[in-house]
Amino acid sequence: MIDIIKHTPLWVFALFAGLIVLGVKQTRAREVTLRSVCVLPVAMAGLSVFGVYSAFSGVIALAVWFVCLVLGWGVARQFGLPKGVRYINEQHVFHIPGSKVPFILIMAIFFTKYCVGVMLAIQLAVTQSTEFMVIVSAIYGILSGIFLARGLQILQARNNQIDLQPA
Image (cartoon, rainbow, N blue to C red):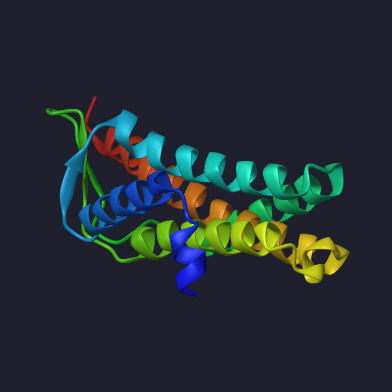
């Protein structure tokens, strides 16, 4: 284990620290702009699809990722809007209550990418199997789908707020 940590590039630790800070911020109530609501889910989905592409670079892996993204999105949509989200029209910001869900999703994507990277670097035989590719692509896809659904559901608060205002 120590060897793995020793051979991890420094930028990975910097990224990890940055993601922890970002994740902790998500656990507190905050007001964010439209841009901020969109950036995090898109960035995490991008990191996720990059993880699939860099590890497997095949059409099948990307297809599994996409199908699982849609499944994760669909499941997350069933849970509805994060409770207490409001759009403040006068300030053009979203009030989002704190939640541990984004922090957990961020860490899950990071650790999946890290563990897969380590497994590929030490050339474990399992990493060459179709099952491994499908499982990893599915994990990335599901996590990305949940993240994107949350972002889209937060955006829906803006539409709901606009629809409720008198003409």
